[in-house]
Image 1 (cartoon, protein in one colour):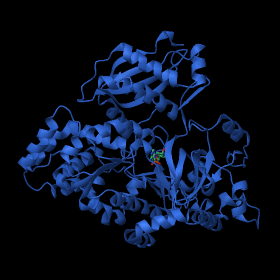
Image 2: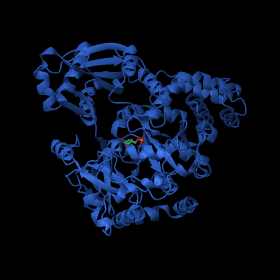
Image 3: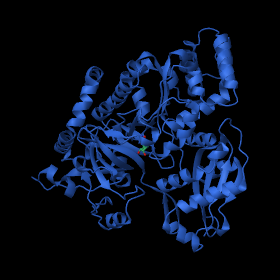
Length: 601
Ligand code: AMP
């Protein structure tokens, strides 16, 4: 298996490989494009764009359109329904990866070949190597990672569709490699019941607390959720540790066996200690107290996950937060080569061997594709008969030509049948590591709230809320999570925000001063753009509403989405709700509602 050889090589020479990759980034990108085109120019999808005898690489950028998922969905659906995968890619597509995009979006099916799957397995090893190099002591213990899987789905063609992580956790490479250094036994990770899985992973993490040097999850939302679960279950966990007997409701046989192999005897002293720590009213620094050897918390905290930074810093009590990598089901973009940089300063370095990257310039503030781009892009449609692919006239640049300080939407051509595919994420170039661009994750390029002509993006919303929540800080009030929706049930419609608030030192509900909460509403509205303000002034949009919900309400929202098929490990709290059920659920946790001052506009 090519992957195994490559992985052995990474273990032995990983840092040297990284230096080589980044130093030769331009050449690697060119070779990669050439190879993809030589192999796939004859596929049904690509062949339409090349005249016989043309130099494919030279004509790639002029002939092949930039597309979104919707444009290539007909091809993917044909493959999922049993047609040969060679319509899209020369090598056989062996499985699909289910992408969440955002949890509110429908899952996409991303094609995957054996080669591309194996290539991707290199990324976690590189991440691990870099972290161990930069944080001393990480190689002297175990990692308490909270990992989860989601059931696979079979397409009519018999190809399986699963989350990338689910497939990865099932490989021998993971089982015989990184999993050996995790506190969670593999069968607790692979348990399909998320609640049993979470319980057992927390239990083994506590039993092995002295060995734990790193705690983490893929996304920060999962770690925040796990701490909430610990809040709810620590008494039962302590009781299991005290008696040496695993709760009967852990019924999944493999999960039960695996956990019992670590919970082998009563440990009353350990139970007392954990109880004493958890009984403290304030959970500030709880991670450090429960896992005293932890050197870092590893979890993605950029983009929409940055809302969890204050919470994780609070629970971490000074332990560095490391945001290790950035990518999507479509392709891995980059890894963080400076793991100890502050969460808000995190940059990732592009790994040039993961895909062929192009970069579509966007507005300077990263707040969205320029209007000009959208209009020109839409009007410059080059339709083929079977699809409505669009070609933009706004020119993307390749990796060698990105400029420091500029914002781009990332476009990938992959080793598994995506050609010039807009992932939907915005990156800001912040420098270069050797020849490879370093970037900050800015946000997904999507409008989340819209009434009339107003289009408010995730970035606009996040910036506005970041400003507004500062008002609460002097009162010791923390905003733990937020979401929103456009309420158009009345005319004029309004934007509604949901905020989950708690006191810094405890989970108690803060006393809500109407004046202060109204001030927050005002700051949010004040931060929105000109279009919003003029529509608000003209009475087309009415005053923004802020609904405060009690601690734990957003966990219920996560449970709701997981019950609907979202994956717990890739869960990203939707920053805007489209589902009425979700809005109803948050409304149930509401403890106060506030409006922007009438006099504002
Ligand atoms: P999925 O394909 O379901 O794994 O979702 C991938 C999406 O998660 C990406 O397109 C990004 O929007 C988001 N994402 C992945 N990595 C990061 C990161 N480091 N920071 C912020 N968002 C991220």
